[in-house]
Amino acid sequence: MNSGKTICTRGILQAFLKEGEEGVALFDFAPEKIGKVGGKIFLAKEDLRKVWVESPRIVPPRLTAKTEEEAWNLARENFQRIEEAFDRLPAQEWKVWVLNDVSLYLHVGTAARLLARIKPAPTVLMNGYYGAYFGECPLSLREREQMDLLKAACQQVFYLPSRGPIPPSW
Image (cartoon, rainbow, N blue to C red):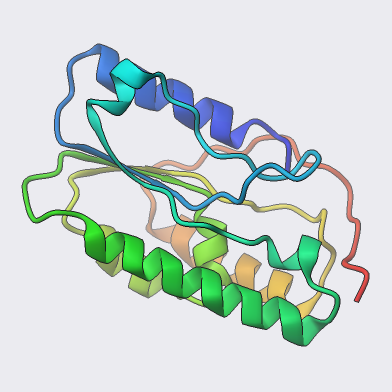
C-alpha cells in the first residue's frame, strides 16, 4: 500500500513504449485513489494511442465494506468486471501485457486462472498488494495465499516497502 507499485509499473510501461514496443495491453485493476490507497496508471495522450487499455471500475472491498459479507460481495463484483475486461481484449498478437493491482483479482479469482488468462502474452509485467496493512481478515488471507502461488510462477519478483497493519473495521 502506497509503496510505489503503480509508479514503478508505469515507468516500466513507458520504457517499453519509448523503445517502440507494439502490441501492448494495459489491464488496470486498481481502484480509484482513496487516501493513500489505490490509483490507476496515468498515461499521456500520446502513450494512450499506443496501448490497449482496460480499466474497469473497481471498489476496494476492505476500505469500503461495513461487514465481511459486504467485502466478499464487492470482491465478487470486482472479479466479474475484471473477467469482462480480459474478454474485451481483441484477438491479435499481443507482445506485452501490463497488469496493475492483480491482488484485486485474487480476492475471488485464483492464481491458476490468472496464469491461464495471461498465458498468450510472451511478456507480462504485473504488480499486486502483498503486505500486512489490512490485517488478517479472511479476504486478506486468501489474497496472500493466491499471491504466494502467483509469485511462485513468476520469473522475477520485486518487493517494495510496506506499511504496518491496520485491520478492517469489520
